[in-house]
Length: 224
Image 1: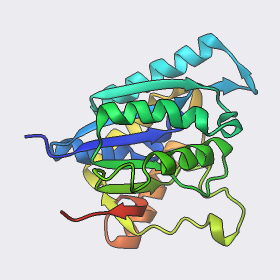
Image 2: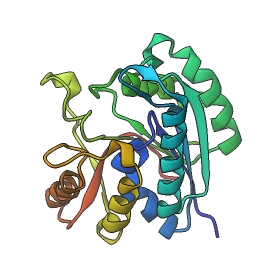
Image 3: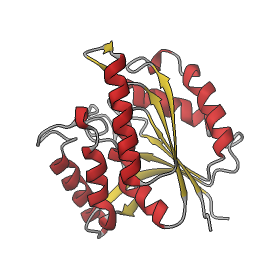
Image 4: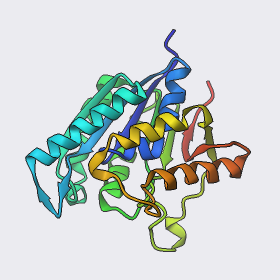
């Protein structure tokens, strides 16, 4: 029996794995239905390349298969330019959300050191404002290695997790899904390297008493 409808909003293809890969698996194991919306296509060296963008989409679909979630949408908005007009994100996102009617939503942290991530947060907080999304029970912000921790050391940029998910049973699957993103692979000590992502999961786990965890900040949590 389906328990909850989960929505992951990812600015870029790979953010869903980096921020929520283990949590996606945990939701699925609990009988939930998971959908992912990718906001932007990918550009390289600040230029759009259709073949490379299609290759990245194939990587996202491969990662989807590894994680096992059901629905994916690509809004195909311009990478590195999402902050130009937040309304351009809000309108198509509202349409997708109306179709999906999620119970639980995850989107990026407002203080990320990436303008696209911040723009997606700004759009999502409008789409999921309380008066417009009364049916949504929980909203969480996730962290993305190489973006969240790279923000300037200012108080408003501090990611302060207050919700943890035990992903010990799913860490191998998360890393396998990350490996699908061949064009985004990096070597250690880059934060998006496989070893660094594993270490980050161990660190978050150690903060709460798990072997491996993903950490989130709660924006909304309603007990019915």
